Image (tube, rainbow, N blue to C red; front, side, top):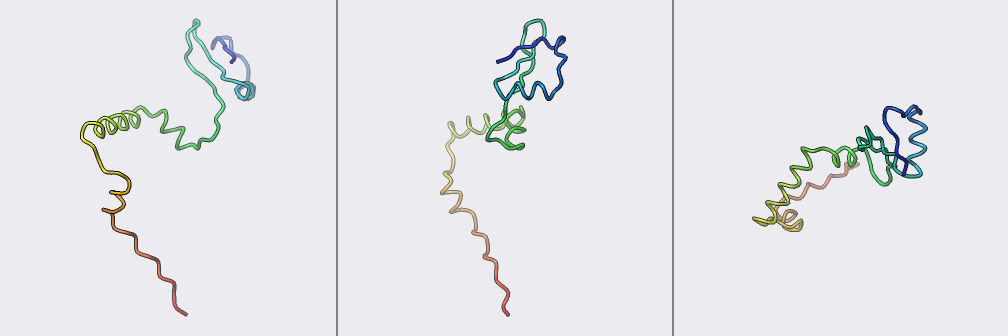
Length: 93
């Protein structure tokens, strides 16, 4: 892990990305961490976006709380309730 005071960080983004391949790069202001640059593995852009979206995370937390309190449907029950998609017909020749 590398720690840098933000005001003294004069390297290029590419340099810090290279450093992040070895371990997290933590940027601080007056010694307090304010940002981190970490290597991304096994994640796509949508996953990264949603994992840091406060609105989405609150929605998931509310949903989990409601599930614990009220219960819900299993994946199998949902599949049974939903209509099956129509099969595509092959054109006749």
